[in-house]
Image (cartoon, rainbow, N blue to C red; front, side, top):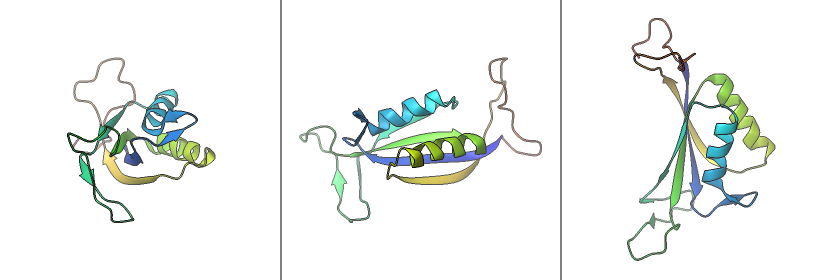
Length: 120
């Protein structure tokens, strides 16, 4: 299949509607019927203000950022981004074109075969 790899960058303590934003994103992706999503805590980085943030052993947890990732079809991407726009969430993201599929799919893997001519 053809689609996109979406990655959202959020602060670990950032909330939306009383829920941590990274958890809210995963929940919304699940409710939208996306195939899956993952969240990863970063160990270091910097953003637009060029301040280095690092997670250290002795610091309190939650001082870093979280990356939330989805691999989606074009239609799924539009639904997710429209939801974020509608919720008025200011969020930085990346979008990378992706080809994806499942090797040896079973009957529960409908709609996940690679497009003809792809190498996935």
